[in-house]
Amino acid sequence: MAGATMNQHATFSSAHESLDGRHRAAGISIGQYLIQRLRDYGLRDLFGIPGDYVLSFYGMLEKSPIRVIGCTREDCAGYAADAYARINGLGAVCVTYCVGGLSVCNSIAGAYAEKSPVVVISGSPGLSERVNNPLLHHKVRDFNTQKDVFEKLCIAGTELSDPVVAFREIDRVLDACVRFKRPVYIEIPRDMVNVVPHIGHSFQRLELSSDPQATAEAASEAATLLAAAERPVIIAGVEVHRFGLQDALLELAEQSQVPIAATLLGKSVIRETHPLYI
Image 1 (tube, rainbow, N blue to C red):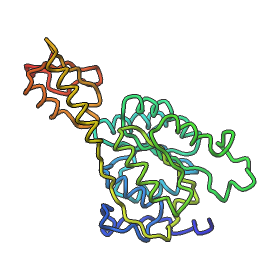
Image 2: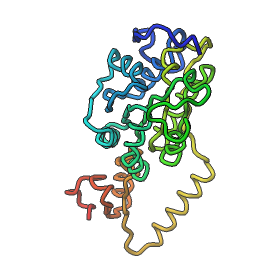
Image 3: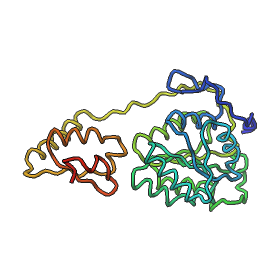
Image 4: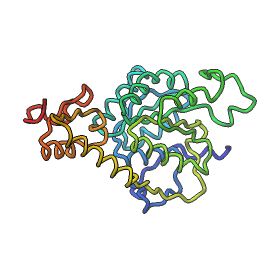
């Protein structure tokens, strides 16, 4: 990966303002593409703590339109990104390898449990540094340990170690984060941040679709249960918030005149002064 020593200064020109399938990701590095894709999903702020394995990517972030908010501890950065995701629809935290990444595990586990779409970005030793398995600082057991840990805490993850598929992997992982409202993990070896893949790539947003037959059967079953109930009540949970279904829920309740109660995390799905809220 000797080609990794390319221009470290990211440029974010209007030509790359939106990669929505009409623009080709040509001539930009892996790090730049990740930043642009985060912006395409509406991310304006990112939380974290820099470290040597992620410094080159941090340099790109600080030159980008994304505001980098430094925190005093990695776990605090993880919780801040979680809260940001709950309010804005997507959050991100950027940390260094193992000493930083393993410190955000508890916050990301909570994000998974409560369906909060957080992107965990971690640097790692460069691929060229890993030859002969050297003793590098912060390495725990082997080079895959942190990635293996986050596999249990995230809905999707990737290591951006292959320029040929790096852009596709970024698209896949970010799509899973937004689609399933769960945290995801992206690891960038530090000698891959500035690599410019010599392949054409056009971002194609995956169209969300459901099984029409399964959807019809579920709706029919719900309607049957609602019609058969003597005193029906809707108990709304956190998924209503995460998937933006508040208006649809209110419309259903008002048309059916069914009262709504909320779980603790589902609180505020409708205003508590509404006549149907209990």
